[in-house]
Image (tube, rainbow, N blue to C red):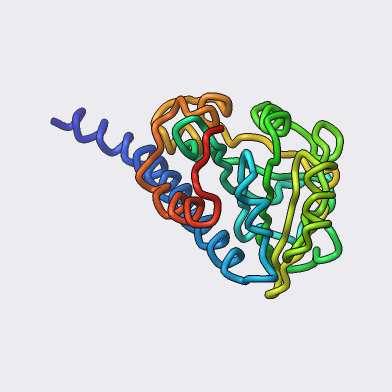
Length: 226
């Protein structure tokens, strides 16, 4: 009896830790859905909807910390999902780090959104780590409804990026920043180790926690065959 009780007590911290980590990932997914909905509801100050409708993948980093933007520092965590032959993939949790993120950087927090515009950009995203601007062409995304700006952006970049801080939303350069899957958080979310490729290619069943994110994606970027 004592041995059984001891086993339960020893296992409890790990169980609590895993549950906390899973809750943290779920919260991040819900926050990402909220960020996308708020930004896209801003009309002329949002991401052009026709760009979002053409996007191969969408990534959102909510509440990214801006006080410690030093090369190699850990910036923040978010999620990314890509189009598949049946709809949006399960979300993969990701980390962004390194580089500089435009002129809005200072003390506080910001939301970062990036959209991957073609299959080549998606292939870069599937790697264990890639650097924006070096491994994948990236540029600040256009805001509003300028057809000329949107066309130019689509022709030049694999990835378009945006940030929102203190109520100001704008295209922003992520030059030099690296993006990588958060393997530990993905394992917590899905209950076992999974690769970025498996998640983004639709080989992993989406979690129930992703429903709010899908609602926003399907509202602003309806499903189309990948």
